[in-house]
Image (tube, one colour):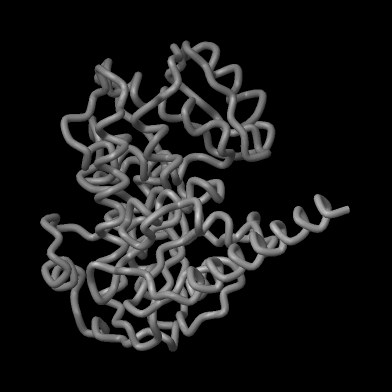
Length: 335
């Protein structure tokens, strides 16, 4: 009986020690190096991975304490991926609330894969939590102000959800999205397949933007990339409708006609060889990865089946049969 009592007492003491430590941990401000730290929590990451990311990005001193906090609250599966601004004075519990239940003074905006820069600007204009500083700015002025070295804004910003304190300027949000894209692109470029027909990360970004606009199904991204890479390697024109549509600008009325494919612009990949001069949209990470890790295939052609998927062919004869089977029956254009 004494042993049981002692064990119960020891257990109680341990529980009280743990509770005291947890109370101290959750209420003590984290030691940020700067007044504000930007944190990028990646989609699909586990709680452990998220905790390690917070350590790597200078928010937490160790991962296990925060992981224990989240698990003890039963919220391990509720962490919301996105880009956050963490301000000095925040406690681990505040951080827990921000990235799980969303109990925060921060607002947010989501940039969607495949959007153009004009769509991004329109989304910021319609968000009343954002201070609109760039209303009268040209795209080039915005690039200069955020420190971008490129001359064309398209595709330079990473599609993600960005959380921010109300009143932050659209320019500051764009700067974060620009640096996020630079970081993701450069990281992916370092891990790229050997022998790809791109000279720079920017060329890979151009290809990724085409893949983003061409792909209706996620599981086909690498095959689409494989077709375009094969075409580049043999000097075949890409012949992709989304680049033509982008080059048409306001002339595009929702339909692309044969005559549109014959009007030469810098983005008409039916009349010009190689990649277009810039991205045509904002690619997501999956499209960037596909551009840098294309499927190993002999296919040179693809045609839409009408359900969002494609039929891939390695010869023109095979492709023509697929066109008859899938496209001409539906009275649609074929690539």
